[in-house]
Length: 340
Image (cartoon, rainbow, N blue to C red):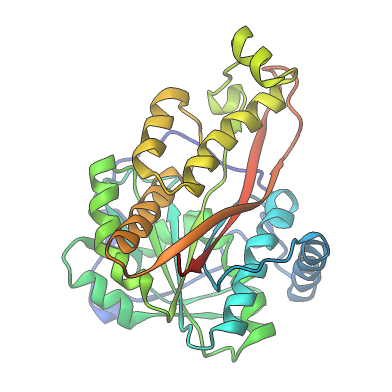
């Protein structure tokens, strides 16, 4: 199954990546990566996810904070990132149990195959998974499209992109265990390689929608992609290694990742952008994360909603000891409502 596909985005978006906004253009999004990135057999997939959740629940630290409102999840093949993603989805399960008014899960995910300078909303009417089909929130989609700032992705672009799809079986599993299968809908939004000013403007635009108590947000991202096949092989300088006790490359990878994770927890989108200029870390979901961070800041500054963001799990696909090795990092974070 796929570890991850971090590639420079070199295919320009044009009208072939977008579809008409008319109802006739809707499609059923197939589980395109089932059978390769995760099990296509319903019983096998259900058993796999059940084990992920059982293991995460056993190791999860209890929280005394508010209701979960969003989570950051990895999106590699389930054999790699599934155990980490389960920690985030336990937060969604808790949110649904504590807040029965949740009706929509917005999934912000990156684009690995099409270069975009904007955001595209899935044109699907239904999202298929081996466990169950998910309904798409057409009402919220039309509200966002009416702003004139979004377009629809077409079926080919939608199905090729794995970073959204890797969330859908987890969502289906949670829906089946917590609530009526028809009760919750999903709205995937693909975030392109947009500049910091656009990250801010889109964040402010969607802020009131994501602050609605009927909406929970999933942000899809892997973290560092290290190795020559990812064109990313930094090494610590001697003073940096000495100061932070870094003896192995996998320790340096975690050091770089956690610097970015700290800025996410601090809710500092500007500093997060500066971090990429300094380290060029290959966090493939950096743009969805940044859009969401700007949304969080906007809602906080406007007195609408304040969130506490904390990472709850971190893992690497392998322990890199030389620049000839490769790995992908996975991290799960949970954002909870706070009255402070």
